[in-house]
Amino acid sequence: MNSDIRPYRIEIPQADLDDLRDRLARARWPRQLPGAGWSRGVPVDYLRNLAEYWGTGYDWRAQEDRLNEFPQFMTEIDGLDIHFLHVRSPEPDALPLILSHGWPNSIVEFTELIGPLTDPRAHGGDPAQAFHVVAPSIPGFGFSSAPTETGMSVERVARIWAELMARLGYDRYGTQGGDLGAYLAPEVAKVAPEHVVGVHINGGFGFPTEADVPGMSEAERADYAQMQEWSTGGLDHHTLLRAAPQTFAYGWNDSPVSLLAWLMHKFQEFCITVDLPEQAIDRDQLLTNATLYWLTGTAGSSSWFMYDNSEFFWPQGQNLVPSGVYGGGPALFKRLAEEHNKIIHWPMDNQGCGHFVAMEVPTHHAADIRRFFAKLR
Image (cartoon, rainbow, N blue to C red; front, side, top):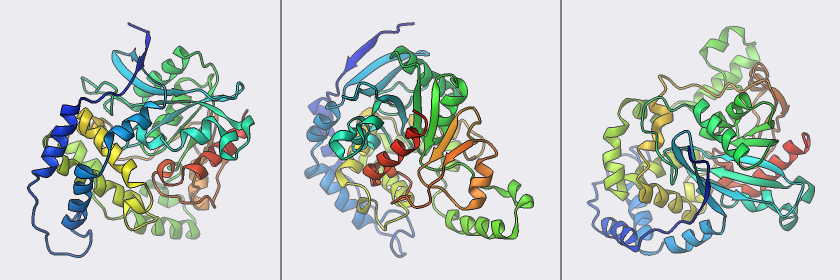
């Protein structure tokens, strides 16, 4: 195994960018189906306007330069090339922290979060609560190698993360994540409890299922009914990507409009606090994420978490090290979360409790991460 850590820089050939713009310009647009708003999927007018901006107004080179401001590296672990950002804090006593992004996202999720975490002094925070940030691209996403066989699991990625932190010389560190990252963050604590000081996730601990109903009080059943009403509907991407990810990957890999429609459909569903994704997340950040998927051809390979699982399940967490969340839920959720976790941080009043808080409210997200780990330093 080659354990070298190699510097990496994003340098996309101009021909790839020209090809993207050409495909966008030649898109074959469908008719708008009957139905109001997003009831039949992404509206044609909405996507057409966004795609036009992607092809004629969006500046990848500026975003590429922005990403390259973060020191990046590549190293081989478990037979896979792992791409990661490694941004050391100017504060010498900073706590190492490994960030795990979600789906359908990438390291782009953290571009506005890293500064407040690594240099809180420059962002109005306490310098004693700084972090050395490590943000890997999950295998199959972005510039990391895609799995070459079935059986890729959260546990396997967590072991890769633990090896990466050891390779960087970090013996004591925290883990943080949302969406898929909310599964990875506690799993790192399971595989390396002697090194992880705490686990912070955006949300997901304690979500009840039908199996929990018999043990619920009347008030808890009311909370569960409200959750069911909120979570019913939408496009069940877990079922789709368990069934036929290869089939969908043809469209995502050949048509940037198809890819953009898929991603924006999910971001619209996930940005629950607003009507449109760009009302919560900067439009260029959304398109940088889409461009990264397009240029690396990883829309299909990023679905391994779904196609290697037989059903959807919430993260179970762990009882080995303390845990906290950005957005706590009702008392029912906390009770269930405490069955599998040592919960020490469960705020109910954090701003913007959407799905991708690192993109929606990065300053508030960083502040909450600092509050949690301040209890554990």
